[in-house]
Image (tube, rainbow, N blue to C red; front, side, top):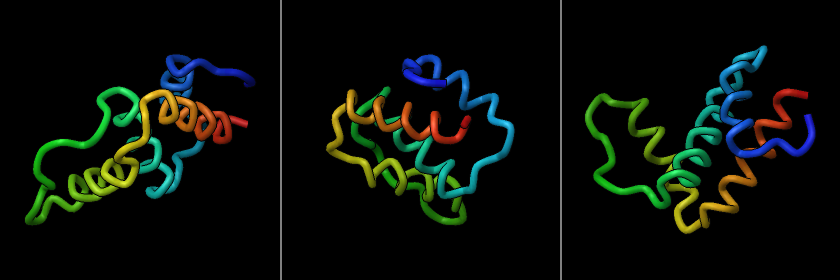
Amino acid sequence: MENLTFEQAILESKKLSERPSNDTLLKIYSLYKQAIEGDVTGEKPGGFDFKGAAKYDAWASVKGKNKEDAKNEYVSLISSLIK
């Protein structure tokens, strides 16, 4: 599928035939959040919320990336997973 829009990529991400690795899932999450909301806000989850902390760290890793770039990277990543 060539030239997906961001919205199409979101739909495709829910229909992937294989579950991506955890690292890839975190990358998908971080780019999506950056594209929709911008830079991460709030406190990093602590204690035993390992999943929440990993998601926070992933999102924080793309801090400063503009929304358009995040959308383009998200689309590229999803496109690479559906081929």
